[in-house]
Image 1 (tube, rainbow, N blue to C red):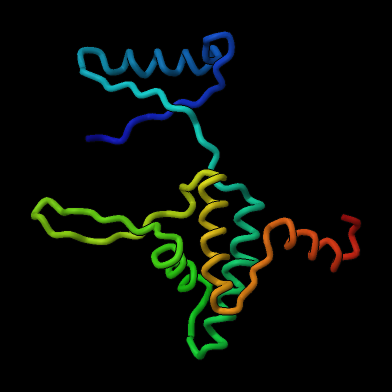
Image 2 (cartoon, one colour; image 1 turned 180 degrees about the vertical axis):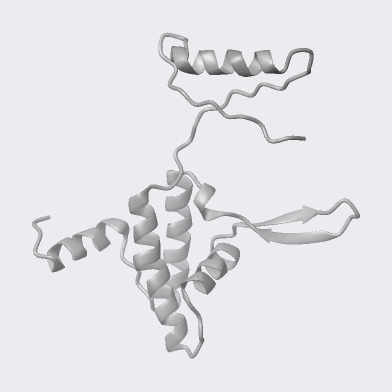
Length: 152
């Protein structure tokens, strides 16, 4: 199966914007005589830039420091992979065509903003068991604003 083409646009009054409709129509014309599968799905927002900065700058940094204090030689990428697999439960089971069962690690970048918030909360709950109190996003931004002398 080949990779499809994605078109995005905001539906208003039951219609897509004209430029999107024209692109869809042009693409369909290019496939004359072929069977197509058209899928319509609501676009979900993936994690925001602010969430990403909080995750890497606060969550991953804190857990990395905790692991290093315990004698582990890890970097942020190592910790990120650990968190996805063992804490965030983003691992998936895949069965290959020959029947072999394999485990893969899902992508945190594909999570919606709400799914990513839940993922971070699972990490915070896990970390507190080891004495690491990761500030919530609101606490983190308030702390940073106060440290920079910026009014909150």
